[in-house]
Amino acid sequence: MKFIFSIALFFILPVHFLAQKADDILATATGLTFTPGALNENVRKAYLSQNELVAQERKNSLATVVREILTEAEAKAAGTTADALIAAELKKAPMPRAAEIKTVFDANRAAFGERTLAQVQSQIVAFLKNNAEQNALKELVEKLKTKHKFVPGKDVNGSGLKPSDVLFTAAGRPYTAGEFDERFKAHFYDVLSEVYDETVYDLQNSIFSALVAQEARTRNIDTGDLIAVEVTNKLRDFSDEERAKLEEALQKKLSEKYSVKILLKEPEPVAHAVTADDDPVFGKAAAPVTVIMFSDFQCSACSATHPVLKKLLAAYPDTVRLVVRDFPLESVHPNAFRSAIAANAARAQGKFFEYIDVLYANQSSLDDASLKKYAQELGLNQKQFELDLASENAAAEIRKDMADGVRFGASGTPTIFVNGVRVHHVSFDTLKRAVERASGRTASK
Image (cartoon, rainbow, N blue to C red; front, side, top):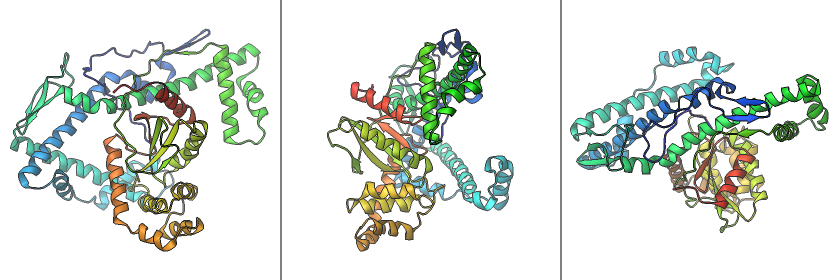
């Protein structure tokens, strides 16, 4: 899942809140203080430029509302739907030319690494096509502003903005700041929380490095010898998981010894109205905490997260239930949508979770022949499975999940919510904290 440095405030707050400064003390330890200078460049920029990023995100969100209201008004006048109107407009966007594709490829060779133009062409085409479509939508909105009498109102980032203030009027309908913040407050929390999580994660790495150096000086050895004593020499199976556990134990020991305190304040959680819909559930129906994962069965990050969620369910068998909703990233994972349909077909025979275990374990082989083979190996009724694999109803259900995911801010996978509150930088520890917070108190609405 991509980390996007876009931030916005929740509730009715203009951009003029307490600014972050380069000399802010983010954490302390015995004999040490940590400021934004301890962060890597990208995280530091995001932390320090929150005011500017807040303003831009609020503007972007307002533009979304303007487009929705104008297209709905035009669709009503034309006797169609807003979706149909937009679809017709998007069709006008030209397909990228070969020269454009080559230009993008040449400009991004370093990012593509060893991959050839043929290997990344579909991604470049999707990128260019999306740009063309966004430009087409912008042109449509500008035309509709004139036709449906768009009148701008108060600045969405203005000082002293009140809930009753009108941000704009279009098609005779005033749209207030109160409506705007009520609709987007959970989204604004998400992006603000994401920067907080990334800042804390990067800060903890910096603190660990500093403490290792300090402890090495205390023992009169170099840092390499310290890591050897505390980590390398204790390895038995030499797995990444074993090394991570030993490093985590060292980090915990040093944090306690040097009295580490993280002073960065976490934003107050705000929940989305995301629901389980009618999607597959693992766990007790009455569990007080619902974890919802928007997943792509061809996504390597989803595959890595799947066992983490299993561990979470095992740790909280009476507290947590898991809901899996579909979010196949078709532009980058050509077999993801068919895999989602296949998983739904397996669900119809009571084997959804067994089937997705197989999908996650075999992400390089998700063609139709493989999907049918996995069903056969699980003992499913093959004829019924193939009928369900061709089902239009299953495809429509997946599209509905995808639309809901977009509505709740998903742009990649896995996207996970715990009782409606989105979890960033997913790990067992972050999920555990989210579950304990959700079972202990209700996120602010």
